[in-house]
Length: 546
Image (cartoon, rainbow, N blue to C red):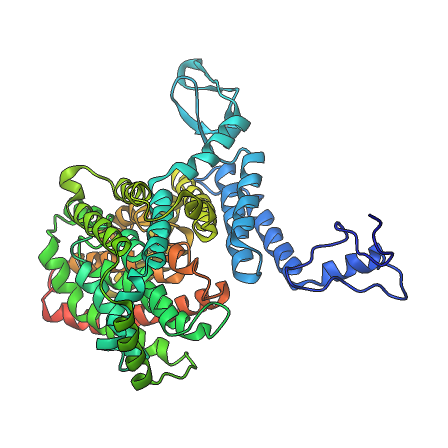
């Protein structure tokens, strides 16, 4: 069939779904020069070009002592990725994919040789001379090794935990169980939208001591309820998104608050307890951790929903909403068989997450087990799993970010950063209290470099505790700040944790708003813990001994 004479060729340019293609001028298609000019004027293109240029410059800076050329290349690509995410609307998975492709092409990963040595991929098939004139040959394929490392990110347990949590959330939503729970919340706590925000926060705090995975708790249990609440209130990413945005942000930040208040709140917290014992000979177990966190933690738990509600411009008729909730609950009747199936799986997952350490069942395994049971019972179908695009998109970009963050640690960038901070603070001759605040702030902001709360802890807590010891910081106060900020710093980005990735993936909050709100919440955390927290810890006598 012949095309109309004014049809626009498919490859004439990128057109967004639903947008009209560029109209020809005087019946003639636009010239290549005109299309190029329009392309170059696109703010996304300009901002991405600047981000790439900054990363290119960083990658070619001569490495300082303690770093290698590969580490600088990785840092350059990482900075480019972060700046592109901050300054453009380009899809996050596309940005991460291109970052990985550049790193593979530049052999900017750590490879494993045939005899088990771990070296920079660029050194494959080279020789090195050590003492006594002995030559060492590094037998490996740098390009294939880089590709293998890049793909390994997609097999990390955190990635599959996030993927499974999305599918469990879909089951909660599709069966109507999430809607039922949300209607009950509205019925009993829906006096205001702020009240629902506090209900989500309270739910996180109640579950925090028992589920040692913030991703399982936030993404697997509370996110589906949050989404159902948004639906009950008539909020979608395209219609009345403000209500859903408020609930998503409340759920996300409540997840980090709960994780910070209990040593069992997230899997990385016990590592801090171990480091405090090793560096300061300090016991910082469950009771001391909670006692130190309870006052500042409850303050931020009260403040964050209140502050977020000030930015929501939406009407909320409490009487009408509660009346509707009662009617809907009456119409739904008793639990359906599929709701019972999902509820049973959730209870099983909850029980296994609580006792997983004693049963040697990783969180990701439990979540995948839950998906398997839902599939075998026919609660959800395999086609539903395949068609859950939000799940697969989040799985892709989070896997890439976790892999890059892991390589940052392996290439020594995190260790170098910690040592640099030690040298800088020593030269500044700060008081112990000022040094404590400085180290804690540096640690909090450094979360921008990490896509894993545990990775952040592993990389920086030990060197920063050693720095604090050298600078005479109060051991209990510094340990408290590092302990609580390990989770609270996750509020800064949408890639800091699996739970953030899941909440962000619902599409209610755009990337720039997420970062702006995260920065504001981060300032609240720092302000509260450096004032209310310090005052409370002084009352506890934590500043009496260094």
